[in-house]
Length: 71
Image (cartoon, rainbow, N blue to C red):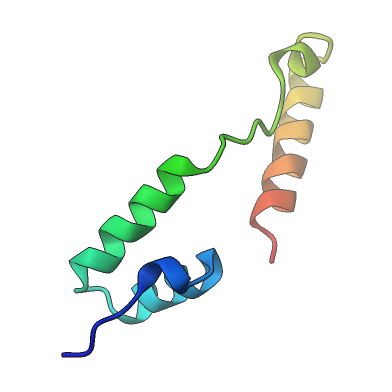
């Protein structure tokens, strides 16, 4: 079996590799380690939500989720 160097892969390459090789536990752990090292991203600050009505909060949350998960 060919040895794979996960550290030389970009995040996107590693994710693609992992999706294509779902049984590769080393790739899975390399991906998790890399994800742990990335800074957490705050999509919406609590101070943003405090000043909004519940309807506006839902709208803002929906908008931010669409931005994050749209390719």
